[in-house]
Image (cartoon, rainbow, N blue to C red; front, side):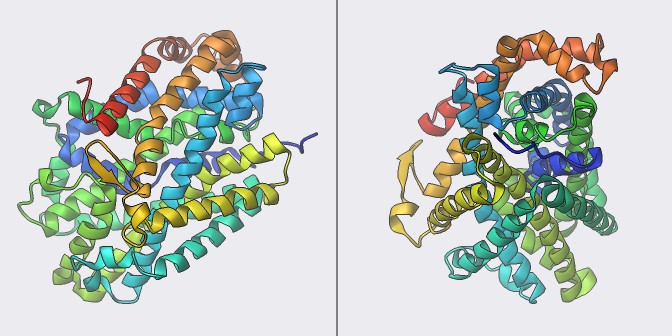
Length: 472
């Protein structure tokens, strides 16, 4: 016998928690820079189209599978395909993926925390030195920051869904929104900021090509935490009377809103404090941008607001990124914790101890794979280059597996669970969904072109990452 399933206390709590899982470093830095490097307004338009036509249907599929089964991702696959040897593969992938994503996300979060501490201590100028980042990630301080983050996440998850995850999201997400809006207002009042706004918002249709289309779709899919098992798990905590279609739309709107607003901060800041910059020069790596490029942007603000003014703005930004990273980390870790609770009938604390302790060990291994431990720094080789353990985790579990997980959930919902059962679950809590255009489109899309696109992205990513070739 398992304990009664935990539930979110309010619809707002669910939306903020789900948005918290989706809003992360990719929204605050990756999205604006991808937009800048891929045609500005044209990228935004494509991104919005993909969120509407692909991401929302997949979100609805994950949430409905979770709510109907009342189980974690593995339990959901077993629920819909009892006795099958094939279908649980999708469930295992949806448990292992967030576990490993949480490992590298913990490492990035500890870096953010370290930079936040350094900035608030008055060391903003030191952060702009070429060798600072490399020295910092190989210092003993990283162990202290990892310990602090482990305690913070552990405390939140200890209190469960309603008192832990939901309450934390209700504090951190509004704080994140307020800080982000404050920074946008500040940046837009700087000289030459409108040049960044113009570049960001006015489409250059001539720049749309296969690369831009693929980038916009990947950003939309990854940004909304699809394929990570998070929405299946959070769906299992939803009230039966809640509207899944409306909730999916609100989460997508919140996530896209944060990403769009972040663009109104990052791009004008880059143009304002680096006049004449070519967006093509920006790095594709969010990590590189956060820890090497943006500190220089903030330091440049001292000309107009002084050193301490620039330090305050930088502190607010890194606190913003820290909150976003922490909410995502909590949501990601909840997936394997829920899985252990369900599959082993363990208490939350016991499951949290098992998942957390093993995860910290692997996170430590990733954290020291930048020069501290040679065998982990040069862990393997593929795609014509040496790769660290950290590189391997990102390439496999973040860049590659997510589209495959999305492909599997589409097939499970439409072809195993069947369309009429899926429709009945979505109509529960939302009678207007029955016979609607959204219902007809969702069934058609999930059963035809969406899984084809996701499978194509998966295969192309494997070829590109590991074999240095491509289908296109």
